Length: 328
Image (cartoon, rainbow, N blue to C red; front, side, top):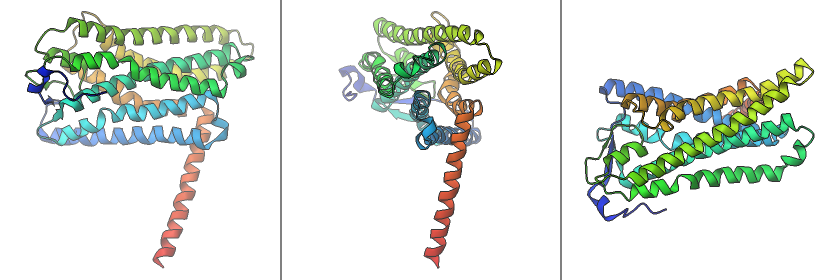
């Protein structure tokens, strides 16, 4: 993807200004510290899940392989926007280059699309595990799981490629101020010097399609799962099934609840502040909560995280001993 020389008209604008959250310098520093803590906790939580899945042989199953990839996705999802947002809190110019803006737009929407695909595949996995338990081992083989993971990544990164290219070739001749903390398609379309109904239609259609279709697929999958669980004779079996699916459902509701308000609402105008809050929620808050939700409601994941903690303690002790010996 080449974002340099994006049309002859775009040469008049070589950077955009991301206003972010306009406030006093003191508040900007406080927000920087708060966002930094959230960012670090998000990275630590998702890295812990990846380590738990990689280091624990009992977690080398399709469900946890998908969860490990989902955690890896969340790390890159926050990295698409948060580092630049943190820099802008302490910057006086708050500028982002033309190429950087469209790269951020592409990766932000690609990660979001990939998340929709992963949540759908995880619902697919739970459906077969509960509704077709006798056939689960033959359906969700290791090879098929890898194919599904690769498909999620590839489809996610191809889904929004055309809208980004179309928007990047629009004429931008000023102003170049975006009243947001990320490069979003809506503000960029507004800044275009000429109307772009086709680019707007394609952008909105693709965003709505992946959100609605994946959400519908997940709802149908879990409706079938619910019917199957209610037919289980033992209360303990029903509780275990609800426990394994409950965390995924909470993540689905958090993620889709916010993006549907923002991206699937034709003719509904949102205030700039509301747009920022909603984007902040699914760009930073849900990636922070997801590791907590999956670890707190899953005994096997708790056990895996405990082993990660024990390995870290042992590694620190060994490192401390070696440091003392080198000093002596």
